[in-house]
Amino acid sequence: MNVFIGLFIILAFLVIGNLLSALLGGFIPGSVIGMLLLFLSLLTGVIKDKWVRQAATFLTDNMMIFFMPAFMGIMDLWGVVKMDLWAWIAVLVLTTILVMLASGLTQTFVERLVSRHKAAHADKTGKIIKQED
Amino acid sequence: MKELMMNMPAMLALTTGAYLLGVWVKRKSGLSMLHPFLISVPVVIAILKVTDIPCSFYIESNVIIDFFLGPCVVALGLLLYDHRKIISRNLVGILSAVTSGSVVGVASVYAMCRMLRLDEVFLLSLEPKSVTAPIAIEISTFLGGDQSLTAVSVVLCGFIGAVIGPLILKVFRMKSPIAKGLAMGCASHGLGTARAIEMGAVEGAVSGLAIALMGVMTAVAVPLFNLIVGL
Image (tube, rainbow over all chains, first blue to last red):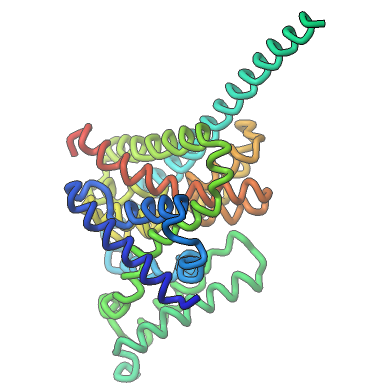
């Protein structure tokens, strides 16, 4: 499969995403809309995964190189950041821990609910079987 | 030397070469925590300093590389598709976890930046920081934040989560592989996922899909939150 087929599909979804983003008043970045549309098109089979796989894995496997230029821009901004260095680091450390707890504990909670529901359900069916005996 | 280097092909070669060097060193060392940027970035800075080329010229010359951030985000759609079975089996848990992660992420950044009286540019650049860099940079640009500050914050959050994540998981007794994967992926995207892969296959897969979903949720949560607080 020619890698440009995948690249074309990805670019086309980016264009559509940008268009929808503009129609929505620029609320959500076009690329994020494009990602969701690609996901939906793959699920529905409109786009076959083998068409995009080569191009998509090239992009996602090497994701880091694509934000190297943005990262380097910190050199020009260092003067501003330096003054609030510790406050900045403190925000990053604390909020990262909070996000980790929020997501991990939410999933733990949902799992507990599901297993309790299942146990209750099993109990009921168990009783029914006993009654039938 | 400066004449030889001060052109677009040389600057693109510098980016790709430094990136490959970083990836190579990471692979040779076998350390999941060794971010390739620890090698690549100092190499680029050193070469720019030695040849006396301004950083702004380097960034301008790399617009082609920078452009691919958008396609990168779109390509994550395939990653979601590849994990569709895990997603549909744990839909409620994964969606609630990602939603609470993104809301807590945005709200806590807002609260802390205000408490510490940090400049507006910090607030706008940090709000999307729990998301993988390409998406975070897109959101930050939308908000009027600083791309570079966002990119560096994202990478630092990756480090922070990958280092202290396993301890947090232990202290708060998160034992299920899915909860572990979500915690690592939502808070620390790429580097968190590298760590989650070492914990197990399910942890790694869940952490990987959390990266893409967290991006979607945060892209919605940040503008909504700013609308509510009137930013």
